[in-house]
Image (cartoon, rainbow, N blue to C red; front, side, top):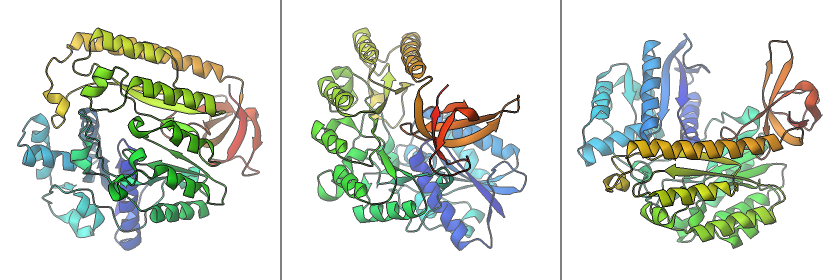
Length: 448
């Protein structure tokens, strides 16, 4: 049987998919062969790893499911969507159009649902019966995993699972459970294994990386982990995603300035600037502290990249709150900004809040913010033109004039999140890794 997989949304999910992929390839290679294309004719079954953080993620799951059914594939659904509906229907006894769709899926003979426990203890016979899933915290598989990005010389390490923050708009703690950190020794050993396989960039992941180890020893140990990682001798770099700002301090940032292998990439999910809105979000930091952190980064790192995201029209957001956010965005601290329109999630505390912003105001505010963000980010891209950068080749195309176009990810930019540059072959100044220019090569180039 040829199988493939589709991983929707976050790269934390991708790590889970990689564990399952390795288990299948290692233990059941006589029964399964891997196909890179889930829609190819030879592919019989597709593992679909899902997201349920927001309704748009669930919508994408349903759309992907329909595409696969049209191709007459057998489908195994895993991940957050399965867990989400267990909470919705069993713990909260909620029924709506989505749960009706879910019941139809459970009756489909070509679709199987696997819980996280099933994933951890995967056996082929799980695919031949209808499974009653159940609520339980995420179970980390006790096995190796397949590395799907190794050809591009980067890979992810998930340092913790779950979350303890309980932000009022977020349902991840219900779906993924409380935070469970991996021991430092496990992370360092996996980093060593990746480096020996020629991985040049390691990306550390967790729902909240700044709280790494707080569940084990009651105090965060992220920066102690980074110091150990930095002491490894080989030629590699690493970056950290999802650093929540509430327990981040200037002392932490000072430690980062002394690390030689750390990529100065700061992924700070700020969500808003208004103290009132942050309080109702259960985000426990104030705007003054945020500005201190941002200014420290600007003044103490020769080069840096700051990414954030904001939620527009959270309940109780007044025009004054919105203008406060707009004025903050205008200060132009960020290299990348993701904007999200707030909407109620049935399992979130914020869905119970009164005084929601009306739909017309919602759209007006979002478009104002988007126009400003687009203008600022286009200005930053314009300032990058005709300058030299170092980056990694992610793809090579030939255009309609039969000319090579090289797609390069600049070294500060994060894979799968930030923009890449597209340049002609003649704009490459130097190759650092191979005499032949190929995917995965590090190059110095002039950006057009």
